[in-house]
Length: 387
Image (cartoon, rainbow, N blue to C red):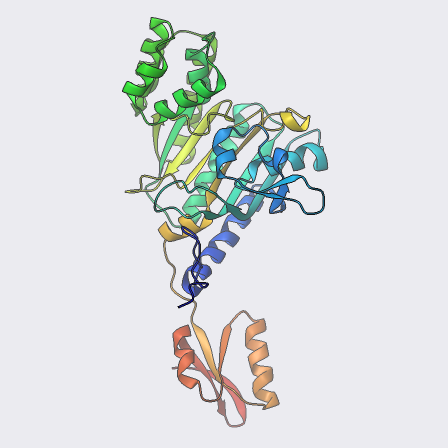
């Protein structure tokens, strides 16, 4: 038997009921970003490989599908993340001197999934703010992320804050190459103290102690006080802790419904984050529904190194966790060539109603649309009546 209809592993079709939720959520997210002044951009699905991977580190390289352009012979990549593309647009196409607020939503493809149960095709929504180095930009992006996820109907959100400068401050002056630094960041994110001890064997004793301390710094606001007491008193570390405290205070006032925590060991995306980073979690879910932070170096490879902060999420994954609104009820109409009936159907659709015409021989199939009304003829006029 032919198996040509089978899809690749961790790739799936999106069927009508889920597709409806995903599309409605996509529209909600874009409208929410527009309410903050973010302009929509639509980068291409494929680009030259060096542009897609600029400044993103090994992790994204391994996730990127690669192919040869039959026109130029150059290597192309199917995007696995849209952030580098938006940075390119800001640097070379818009080239604004002031602040640029950009939003996007499109498919990304991963050669390697994030987990055994994860999809390799994501519908990535995100927002990026370029051109402002102050914490005001970080706060705006976090506000938007919280509002966006709240708009999906999720409640009881947990916001975890951290900062890439903490690890850089701890390792300042340490003789580490890029590969060893990436391994340290991954072990720290896993809170793997044993691996940190092995990877940090070449570090001075205070550096090894600081790494072990970082791995245990997660919890409530008391974590910041403990970090000030136990981590080295270096400029990057002090500034990071000051910024985290200020951000947490502002967010607590504007979003009292969100629980705020700190995970100073989380170095996810360490290759490109340059400052505060955050992750949003829904109750009883171990995988973040949204991640973001500051990555001021993201545009440097495009010749325009300016401040940048943003976040992204997978719309499909968020739709699976979001509150499921009931199907919008529809109007059932008979099929006929009667001009008055056809005019009534067009009028109802123009008013925003869903009208399902029962085709000849298929009258029962309209029931799957949850039709609570029907279009019937009364005294020569077509009127809507409750079923």
